[in-house]
Image 1 (cartoon, one colour):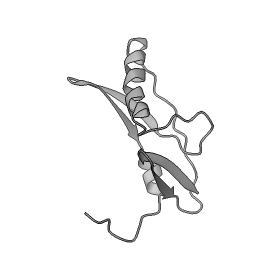
Image 2: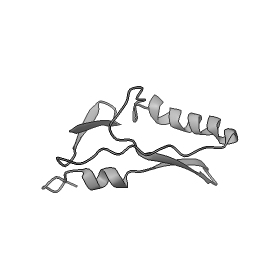
Image 3: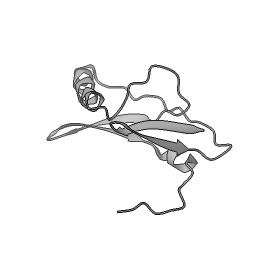
Length: 96
């Protein structure tokens, strides 16, 4: 199974999972109504830059998103631990 992610505009990364790994869909955390618009605005910035792409179809893997409020604004994080355990690792070092 290959997962595709747009990390840099115009470049694709292919992630391969270990054969027989079971896809995991984590439920979303609830957000206070007062923070929903700020989260939408924060998510729109990487969409506009072409870093992430909205997905409107079912996917096999869904990581849970969490929102942390910092002094500089809102920070959006995901918890990809279960996906990381199922990924095949490359056997070569990346050049620096």
